[in-house]
Image (cartoon, rainbow over all chains, first blue to last red; front, side):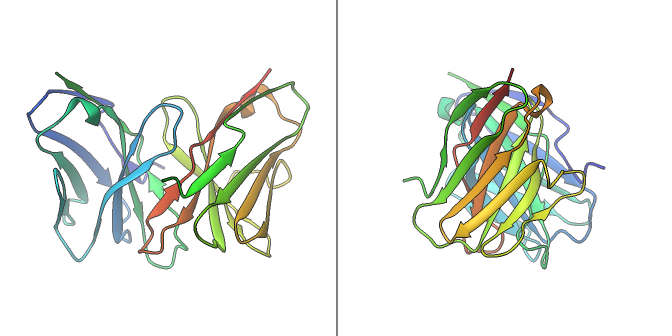
Amino acid sequence: DQQVKQNSPSLSVQEGRISILNCDYTNSMFDYFLWYKKYPAEGPTFLISISSIKDKNEDGRFTVFLNKSAKHLSLHIVPSQPGDSAVYFCAASFSGNTGKLIFGQGTTLQVKP
Amino acid sequence: GAVVSQHPSWVICKSGTSVKIECRSLDFQATTMFWYRQFPKQSLMLMATSNEGSKATYEQGVEKDKFLINHASLTLSTLTVTSAHPEDSSFYICSRLAGAWDTQYFGPGTRLTVL
C-alpha cells in the first residue's frame, strides 16, 4: 500500500525554466510533508517542508504547495539550474508517529543547460 | 557540514557472513535514530527505529533477528545484517531527527553487496 506516490519517475526541463514535481498521498492523517534531494550513492538532503496548517512555503528558488482537499503537494523550482539535477523524494509524517517518514518513489529531475 | 556519518560507505561480503554498519550523530545527542533501506530505483523504506538504551522498533516485515540494531550511546547506532544473502544487497541509510517537527538528517548511506 503506497501511501505516498510520485507518479512521474522522471522530468526533464531546460535551464532557467520552472520545474514542477508532484506528489500525492492517501493517508489523511499526514500533517507534515517534506521534500528531499538525493544524488546517487548519497543520503537524501532536506530541501523544504510544509505543515498541514499551511498551503504554501517558500525558500529561495523552492516553493512547496499543499492542497489538502486533493491530497496533493508539489515542489516548484524556479529558475531551474543544472545543479538541481537529482532524484527528488517527497515524504510525509503525522503527529505521534515518532518521526517516521513515509517516502514516495522519487522523481529524477534533469535540468538541461 | 555533515551531521550524520556512516561507516563503511560500501562493503562487499560473502553470503552467510555478517556485516555491521555504524551510524554516528556528529553534532547532536540522538536518542532516536532511523534505519532505511533503498533498493535500486525504489523508494526509501523505513526498516526500524533505533532507541538509545532500549530495543529497536521494527517495521512490519523486517526481521529483527536478521537486522540487529544496537543504540548503545547517544551518538552511535549500529545495524548488523546477520547471515547476509544476495537479496540483502541494498543501500542502507540512517538518519536522526533534526529537532524541528519530523525533519531528519540523513547519513551518506552504505552500499552492501552480498556475493
